[in-house]
Length: 234
Ligand SMILES: Cc1cc2nc3c(=O)[nH]c(=O)nc-3n(C[C@H](O)[C@H](O)[C@H](O)COP(=O)(O)OP(=O)(O)OC[C@H]3O[C@@H](n4cnc5c(N)ncnc54)[C@H](O)[C@@H]3O)c2cc1C
Image 1 (tube, helix red, strand yellow):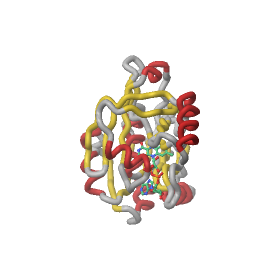
Image 2: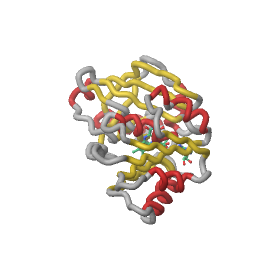
Image 3: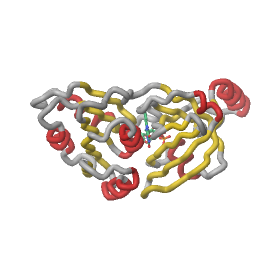
C-alpha cells in the first residue's frame, strides 16, 4: 500500500468507523484473550446476542476482521470480545500485541446470528475456538444448552470454559475426531435448536448431518467463522 493510498483509506475509514479504546486485556488460556472495548458510540446501541463487531487491525487498509461481543453495556459503552489468536493474520497479530490504552477502529455491531429467539427449546451448540464468545452470548439468553466444541488444543479450550461459567453438558474433542455422533446424541428426544459456527467445513458437515437426525432440529442457526485458506471471512 503506497503512503497516499494508505492515507486515503485511513480518511475513508475515519468516516465509517468508530474509535474504541481497549480498557482491559486478560489472557484466558493459551491462545485465548478476553479484551474489553469502550466507545462513546457503544452507548447508542441495542445489542442483539450473536451479532458481530468488526474492526480494522491495520491502518492504511480497509480490511476488517470479525468478532462476537459476549455482552454489551450501553450505559457504560462497553463490550468484551474473546479472541482466538491463531496464526499470523492481522487480527491475531493485533490481539497478541494489544495493551490497555490502545485504540482501534470498529464497525458495528451488526446482525449475524440472532440468538434472541432460542429460549424455550434445548439448544445444541457446535463450535470451535472462534465460537467461544458466541457460547457466552448464548448464555445471556438460555442455559438449556449442550455444548460440543472441536479444538486444535482441547485441553486449552476445556480449561477456559469453567471461568466462563460453561461447566455443564460441555464436551471438547480434538479437531477432526468424531464430532458428528456427539452432536446427534446431544439432540435428545425433542426438537432442538442447532447453533453451529466455526470452521466452514464443520458447519457444512453438521448442517448436512442434522438432516438425518431422528428428530430434525426445529431451527438451524449456522455460520462459517473461518475457512481454510480464506482470510477475513465475514
Ligand atoms: C460472524 C463472525 C464472528 C466471529 N467471531 C469470532 C470471535 O468471537 N472470536 C474469534 O476468535 N474469532 C471469531 N471469528 C473468526 C475470525 O474472524 C477469523 O478467525 C479471522 O480470520 C481471524 O483473522 P486473522 O486476521 O487473524 O486471520 P486471517 O488473515 O483472516 O486468516 C489467515 C489464515 O488463517 C486461517 N484461519 C483463520 N482463523 C482460523 C482458525 N480459527 N483456525 C485455523 N485457521 C484459521 C485462514 O483460513 C487464513 O488462511 C468470527 C468470524 C465471523 C465471520
